[in-house]
Image 1 (cartoon, rainbow, N blue to C red):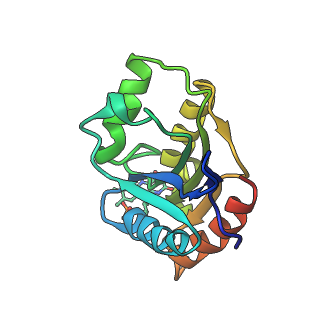
Image 2 (spheres, rainbow, N blue to C red):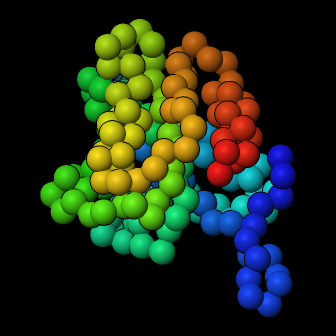
Length: 163
Ligand SMILES: Cc1cc2nc3c(=O)[nH]c(=O)nc-3n(C[C@H](O)[C@H](O)[C@H](O)COP(=O)(O)O)c2cc1C
């Protein structure tokens, strides 16, 4: 993976900032996000993992690059921790044309029609608000897949080359 960063006016290289929005109920998605943070940190990304959405109105302020890493609950629903973000974006729509994003959706294939519904919901929401998705959405069957974090890491290494 190439080293990432942007040049400042004095010629130094700023670390590229990436915000990972994690929707999780029992920790799988957070575990995946932590794996990505550790790996991307090695190639020059400054990664922040967000699991607490009590400050929903500030999530996209001063951000350009976002990775959604979200599990699914209920019947294709979002985990409780990230639900406030979706509710806020629905209630107070904001233009997100400055945001480029990727999506890692975790689910269980046996849920069939609602497979990875949480990640899909956020993908649709961000796209509707004008954000640009980079690459294809990754959908992981976290129940049959032995190492969802490794699958996500391989996807992510390719994803950053598309940025
Ligand atoms: C009560 C419950 C409901 C679920 N509903 C769905 C679903 O509708 N679609 C899906 O793809 N996965 C569903 N799953 C599977 C989870 O998304 C999957 O196990 C995921 O890895 C959990 O990640 P987390 O530990 O980050 O919460 C459900 C799991 C539970 C326990």
